[in-house]
Length: 102
Image 1 (cartoon, rainbow, N blue to C red):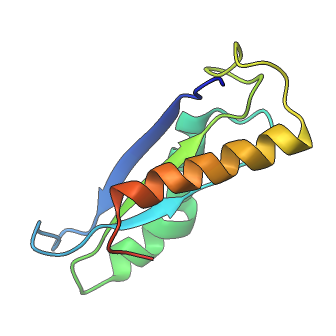
Image 2 (cartoon, helix red, strand yellow):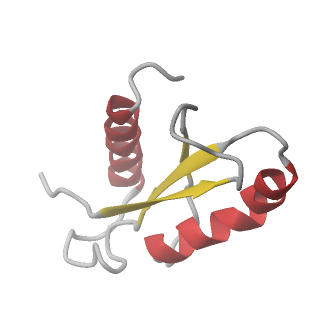
Image 3 (cartoon, helix red, strand yellow):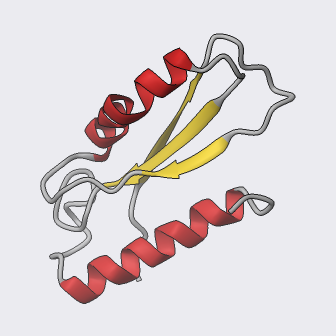
């Protein structure tokens, strides 16, 4: 089984400190979108919330590029079954990093 490359980045409010939990977010973008762009694009959705939050908050945003798209272009061609399996595997990997959160 081919292991796909993934990317994550933490975005936090100005008042955030490490005594508060980080909220994991999985960002699935569309076909042909590189995972780095997907994580950056997540700020379109999360940025205003982070900026407006008076509470300390941080999001660890995770994404991966689908099979056949950089940098996973050597992982074969995408299919519905493979995309579903990859998404479930990716979800499990992120969930394992944050076992105490939903």
